[in-house]
Every structure is written in C-alpha cells, then in structure tokens.
Amino acid sequence: MAPKHEFVTCPTCGTKVSVPDTIQDPMGRPLRWMTGPDRDMNWYQACQWARTLEDTQWRMPTGDELAGLGPKLHPDFKTSGWWIWSGESDGPLSAMGLDVNLGQVYSGGRELDSGGRVFVVR
Image (cartoon, rainbow, N blue to C red):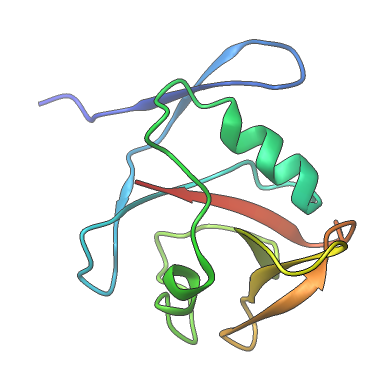
C-alpha cells in the first residue's frame, strides 16, 4: 500500500509540495499532526503557512494541545526549532507557544522568528 501524503501549497512560490505522512498524536488523543517547514518563522508567517493548506480542516494547535506533546517531542516530530507556535494570541503583541527544550507552553512575542516553527493539527 502506498503511503498517504498530504499536499500543501508553498505560500512563497505557489508550488504544491508533498508532505510526509501525518503523525498520530503521541498522547493518544484523537488528533493528527503535521509539521510545517523546518525554517524560522514568526507567528504571522506561521499563521499564513497554516492557511495555505488545501485541506481546511488543518489548524494551528491550541496551547493545551501543544502542552500535551510532553516534555520531549516524539521522534516523529522532526524539527530543528526550539519554539512551536499555537494559534492562540495572548495580547496585542504576543501568542502562546511550546518551548521544545523545556516542554512548557507560555507566551512569546509574535515577531519572534529565531527557532520558531509551525505544526498543524486536525
């Protein structure tokens, strides 16, 4: 059986890109995860990327969903970043996210892009 692939449209050039299989939630919740590009992005760029997905059921995770990923990311979540954005804003200039190294969710400036990544769930 051929592996299932998701497709996204690159927000920069418009090319359709095949994304590897989605990841079942490691905590057993009824969620499927997909990692975004492994490149630095701020919250605004992460939101823009998530909106480009052809399947509109994908969304950025909540802070609680990110917190459930545990203190150490499952190996299937391949990322070189240290921060994963949630879809939740936290005031006019900040948004919630997961500090991958600490395994904790807290607020960070939306303009932060060094090490910031986007994951989506459905």
